[in-house]
Amino acid sequence: MWQLIMKKNEEPRVIGGFGNKCNKGTQFHNQNRIYDNKLATCVNTAFNPYYLDNERERESDTMSLRIRKLVPVETLKLMGFERKDEQAMRNADMGDMAIFHCSGDSIITTCLMALFGQMLPMSEQELHQKINDYVERLVKE
Image 1 (cartoon, rainbow, N blue to C red):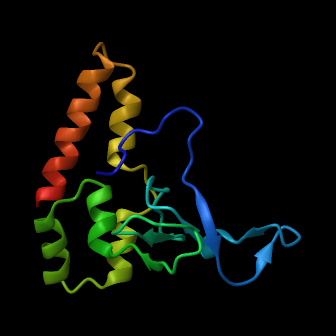
Image 2 (image 1 turned 180 degrees about the horizontal axis):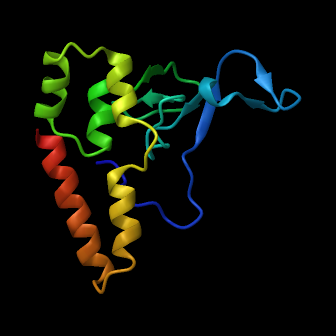
């Protein structure tokens, strides 16, 4: 199961990249970075990151790995859209790029829930349960 709430000072881990490097050859450009799939990065219309697709556990970082981009339905689910919304977009002849734009340039809904949940009078366990219930509902669709 994906980790839904980050621990303090935790960031999505860049595990590599491709193409030319920037900053005097010390790092990859944002659009060329490859992230571990443990935590999601922000989704926006200008930048859809590549994620490591590790269905099986990695034995080592040198093992051959498959890398892929998020597909439109995945970005919509991160933003809280339901499957029927994606189907309605397809029925309206919206292409992949238009769907990416609909789901981009915002904060992922579970992140907003975690932020706003800190302001509400509820226990951390109750907040985690609400977020997990929400994610389970989206995943089942």
